[in-house]
Length: 394
Image (cartoon, rainbow, N blue to C red; front, side):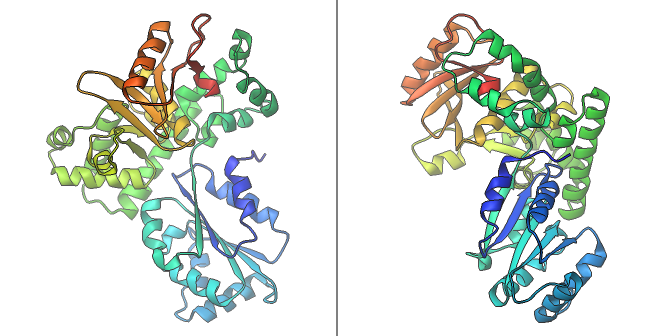
């Protein structure tokens, strides 16, 4: 059974454009499934290649790009008088594809639709020479609304409740169990589709193992892959905390510049996200101390020592990041804010919000000169709900 993803509508809107569509993101988030849905949406004059299959790659290995075009036409029995749609899965496995895509777009009626597992490689595969010829879409694990779709919940009912100004306890309880599962196990599609906790754990371990082997060992070819693994474990324990590169380099017994390069790699392959401190200066935001969050709570779940508070904060970050830019606020005086969305709205994360939390974040919001503030609560609160939003309706 196919479950719709939000990104699907954006992709279909660009089917008629000339530019290549490139879907990238963390492994196992559903890129191939969405590309297959697009393939099914195109009535005819289309062909599918999977670059994990060396026989499919062979069609693109000719030094004459015009011959490659003929290879594609003959394999798919395509009509050259009409636009043809070429779908390619896992393009990062054949680096020469970018030059071929550019040439065929410029000389023939070819629409390319591609997936790649990591932006780290796609940035090298599709350089600025393809400017104007590509549209890149980033795909993430399920957000909570998509998670509910996978659970076969009524989307219209959820949206109606979410838009209410005053959420009742009954409204809250409709989605409480789902949100607790979402916080604990994350949003990888294959994990969301099973209710068996042992199977969830096995699939998450397999997802992490696949990322580690395919991205870190095979593609990145890091000689000290164990150091990257150890860094990941250290980062997991520091979710929601400011990173100290000096301490990390000391614990790992590697150079600080090496730690920085590993962090850049993990970020570029969608495994982690780094959040900068709010500043009026862009340069200070980039150079300042950053906080770390993971792509999905399920990945955190397979690592030991992660607190319930860290899991909730990581969830809220991933919910907010799809709504715009996210930063944090902290002053030497101790005033701090967990998240700031689009440099306007402050969010403080609490498992159970209290009126004291609401007053505190409002005070710090004024210090930071922001427009408004909210406390994100996982638990339902009956009193003092002004200034409180529940995680499941964020």
